[in-house]
Image (cartoon, rainbow over all chains, first blue to last red; front, top):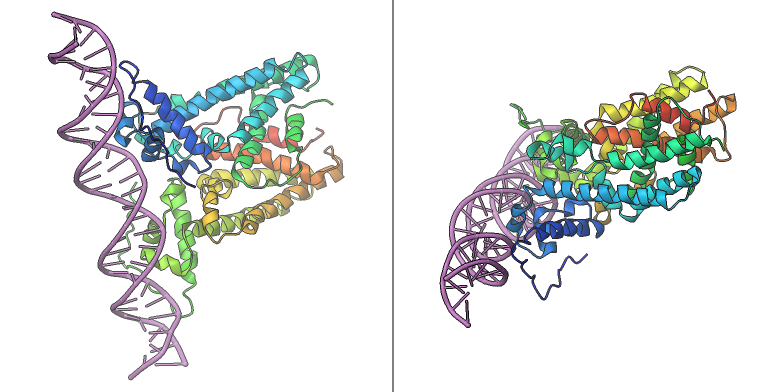
Length: 213
Length: 213
DNA sequence: GGCCATAAGCTAACGCCCGTAAGTCTAAGA
DNA sequence: TCTTAGACTTACGGGCGTTAGCTTATGGCC
């Protein structure tokens, strides 16, 4: 893979007061490196700088260190994920069952569309380095919460509509459903060829949502 | 963390014909590095050599490169996993329900006991490097098969005993069950604090095995 | 229109660790 | 005693994160 940046024009410096734009460009560069198929080790401080067309030390004006870049990427992608799920929910109409499948399949689609991004969102190698940096535990714990809420909502709707067996703990059921989706999404993101039937996603959803059908 | 090896005696050279023993020592050193809590990036060719008390180039007599060491670790741990699951099954008595929970909980326990090992077994960063090395695709695809068989067996026993709703595709159901367990195990291996209730494992098992209870 | 303070970003360099190649030593055992 | 398996030493080149200090374009102001 050729990493060569064919920037004839090296890069236009941002205007005064717009220096913050570089922050977004850095994040975009990191995401681009992930999407190019390399794993997260390809996202070094220097490689990000090269991709963004800037000098490596220029990153320090916007990020304390490399793990901080990763955190920013993860936060952005988590927001995108939650937004995608909400959108899928809203476009699915009123039928709870269709809403459930729409949201769950949207989750799986997000993971499939950008495996490397998904990988670092849930269990990237940057998390251990948190000890050494200024990333707080609170930053991490709040990360998946929003997406989980969407899942809990549609699950609740299914129970309320009587198409799923409810339990005493809806949130716990939502977590279980999410873990199932995550297991599938992660394995797909990591492995060339998945074992098992093609409809394993639907099986997981039906079983973990306790659908009565 | 002090990585210092307090080897006063540097290391006794293996006897003639026993040079292969070093291979196992290298694997053990790699596993030890993982268990020390660092992530897999701590397992470099040089760090493994230090841990094993040998010079770095001495590894080349036994492994083509660093990913090959990782593959050997993964293969060993996969074998251990399958053996553990089989043992749990055999010690669980005849009741299919108890066998199911014994095997599934054994799986989760293995992951919890050695999170970093689990992490590289399913989705470690060494897999992409496979392109560059002599590791074949067949090596990778056969990896989890044995453990999955145990799972399919106990699931089949549950269906046969009438305590679980069977489907047309037992293998597919086993994969789905495994994916659920994997989602939980992986997330636990990766994150400091899991969301959700403590019995989320049991919920997953009951739902994905389609237990009638 | 020209000045100049400063935001925005650069160059150079340090030290570290890595993978790996080339050649060398040394003790086991026939 | 001598062969050779089982290691070791040395060294090269490269990427990394990070620090220190420098350059340059921008845009308000006279």
